[in-house]
Image (tube, rainbow, N blue to C red; front, side):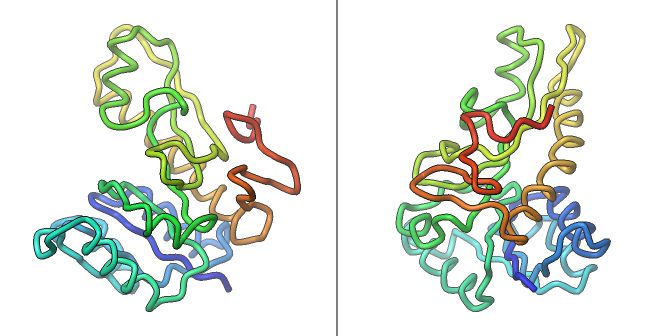
Length: 212
């Protein structure tokens, strides 16, 4: 069975969707560790409840991003994962760390990439008057939120929406699509070759798999 390490910073709702998927058989893999950079992250409680090793690695005890990422890499490698899943891990990873896990690290980003990389994506979509928004699962590369997209999900935006409304609407879709992509990977259907996302032997387009 494939092994997964999940990195979190907060509540861990996407982590919970992975835990549920592993328990109900929709993800044929085992989460072998959860690592957070925040000691108060509720995702650590979720991991402990599911009897998954939970580790906090506080960045304040390290003098540089490089030093922190080296320590993070050492922790992850203790578990020998087949896949590293970023689930709301709010740190920009160093090039050496990303290179080490090239092709075996996934992230979910709350926008329809390549639109709105970075932070405050929901606010930007509302302020720009967009009529749709969404979320994207992608491979992690050295370019921030710039790795090849695998799968997206869209949500409508309405004139009366608040930022919180959009956040909750997008989260529902995140919990739907992230486990799907993880299962594609652990079942051998998904890979990254020469900077391209490959599903079932086919190069995926810019917006990822056509799920419509």
